[in-house]
Image (cartoon, rainbow, N blue to C red; front, side, top):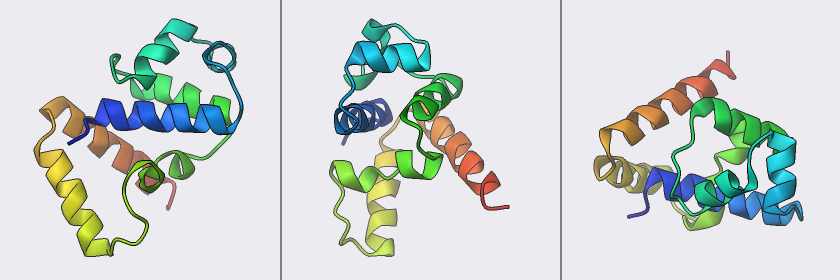
Length: 114
């Protein structure tokens, strides 16, 4: 099972490549070091919610768009129930701190629906 840090890193790399940005260019846009961006992309660095927000803003996309993990390994053809089961398994096998991060992300997404 992929860790949350790996999933977030893979998504950042995917979006960076889609936007044809180097790690250095993304770092400049997000006001972060390119070495930090590289570490996050490889899942070696934990990213705070504040830093993740900077990166998402640098991509000029919504939080919702960023968290479309289906494009990095989960099939878009899964039913809602299957996706919940996959996500539940991933959460169950994650560290408590990662689960808390996901919960914080969920709360942010819910605020956008109010």
